[in-house]
Amino acid sequence: MRAHAVLTLLCACAAIALVRACEPGQAHSGCKIFGASCSCGYGCKTEYIYRTKEACMNALRERSSNICSRSPCVRGICTQTAQDPGFACKCEGTGFYGHRCEKACPTIPMRGLVFPHECIVI
Image (cartoon, rainbow, N blue to C red; front, side):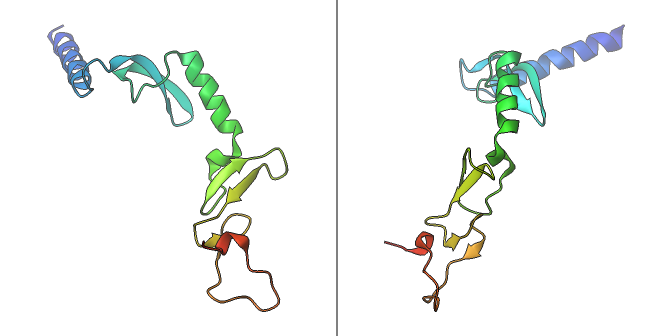
């Protein structure tokens, strides 16, 4: 029985320490995406960003259906599209071009080929 009381006290102290780690007024109950599932508990609003498990599950479903969450672009910004393959990479300003921004921009004009527009620096 004494061990149970000590364990309960330790858990309570840990919860108080967690709340103190938050900015004043920022501790609350909520849920967060943890790996491939939703985890609910008590902590900072910046960590437990979803108010309900349902809101967390909706965000998790949306994340798994968005191909950009799998980081298909080597560099640049990924945008989900309706056309196959379901994404487009915006390479401008990265120094790379190609379907996944995987090719380094040439330092000299390429003979017989059009200079990639992603490589033009204005």
